[in-house]
Image 1 (tube, helix red, strand yellow):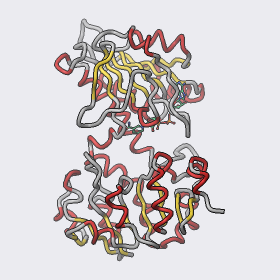
Image 2: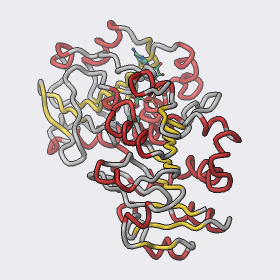
Image 3: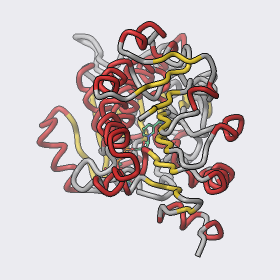
Image 4: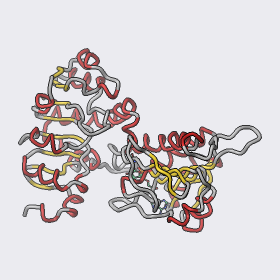
Length: 364
Ligand SMILES: NC(=O)c1ccc[n+]([C@@H]2O[C@H](COP(=O)([O-])OP(=O)(O)OC[C@H]3O[C@@H](n4cnc5c(N)ncnc54)[C@H](O)[C@@H]3O)[C@@H](O)[C@H]2O)c1
């Protein structure tokens, strides 16, 4: 099959759909991969890195898009709409529930659009193509939090790990799922005092087997949240209620009781955030101060580490890309997990969750 890898057009998006090592796996199986020139530059992969593994470097996005299968990272932008073609397979993050215009266009143009975030399998790792980005965002949340605690960055000047004779900083994590667990892993590694609050007692038990007594595990209710947040140097929002806006767990009045210069990193900002005073920010302007507290709310945190994020994403997407390349649309039947990822096919909106958001776009 012919596979296209266009350069991402979104502002500050440096990830790329296929890494050179993924391209090598595909070309070794006899597929042709067309990579737009400089598509991998931002992630640290040169055109030569792709040429060596058998990719064909093409000069424009039009040539890269003109393929049976297009593999990307982010959703097509309006400027790319005219590049989509009937009968083509598009495999990328789409988040259609937040984008009516794109949903309408995908229905109109006749592509088969498969969204990474809706590829679904049974078992613990239910959304396998979302998990790698949650792992990265969780780990980054402590890295960024530690940086913004520095005095020169507006923080209160606390070293999370402390030093012998001076107590460690306190990290409070709301939500002990993938993001929360990975944040705790890094915070514990730094020597911080760590608390995780979650409403799922089974998850709290699991976290106990993972961290033992190195992390304090609390049931998430308003009393525990208030006591923990008031004393936090770094507060991390990591809650998720599937398909819903994140619940506001930290009201404005509680933020006002935090130490001046403490830091909030709300990773759940992409679902509305769990801190009342937090709004979305960007990699260009990541933080602002409100009630004396540093607020960080970047919704695409993995974009800060495109070299790692591209490879982590590829480790999870490549098996599905191989199936699509080998079997075309039949792959959707061979692998039901991939089939669940289909959002739009044959001019129809087919994903149940997106149908619920746009009932008027569902054809009878
Ligand atoms: N900003 C970014 O760049 C970025 C990147 C990846 C993920 N995210 C977001 O981070 C959030 C967390 O993702 P995840 O993969 O860890 O989800 P997850 O489902 O693995 O974990 C969410 C946890 O929140 C817990 N929870 C639900 N309600 C709670 C409450 N009232 N109090 C405490 N805990 C509660 C759940 O029990 C669960 O353990 C999501 O909104 C996700 O989209 C953001």
